[in-house]
Image (cartoon, rainbow, N blue to C red; front, side, top):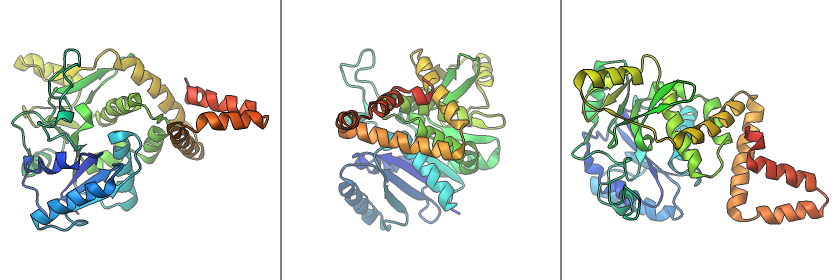
Length: 333
């Protein structure tokens, strides 16, 4: 069994990760593996960059580092689902996982910085990047996990750990960009096949879905007996209440609260998610197929042509049902 999987979600920016690999300390080629899930339009260019990297290291592409081509759906959140699904299928998981976007370690490229015209944030580093002067020491992470079995997640969040407060009174943690480390056993337990398929079933090709995923991934992992460990401050906590108590005791700030505009967005997708999760496995898989098919159809520009053909064939009712599906009727809108 490998010690760590370093899982990188890439779209056309593999150099962003490779040039900052030295921020990962104590990578052991005999025990650790790098898996790059790539959905780039030019997969070969990314593969060639990875090949140059492994040659410099004296490694072998396909051994110490693997680059896995995937369909471009759901940006990095879709890649997380693909990785977890693959982990379940192969049964060849490591003890621990560090997973992040390809630019997480990169504090210099323009895609890690908010555009100057962005109100209040222009020119600042994005919160989904690693904090200043922080390195990802795999030996240290292994020690943290080994010394306290309660530690389930290790994170290093530039914007501090997020707390999302739901309208029903429940609260949970989330990490910026959903970039963090997790015990593999806890990830497998939290993200069952029915949950992964429900995420895919409510996918609609929008950035909003990705934001919902970032929040709900945190919800699935905020559970009794699973502590979150801050690699920056070295504090650990099990739930938002205990974190607030720690802040009061130490007179420090360790969290950020989700912006108000996240709440209606989250609730919209959560209603859809819950509806699909309650369906039978067969219907859930049908939802997955239809959702991915419709998103592809929309992206191809063929939907209007198909609608005209159906109406010409006298199947206007079917066309209407399709429009309703796209509007979210079957997703409990």
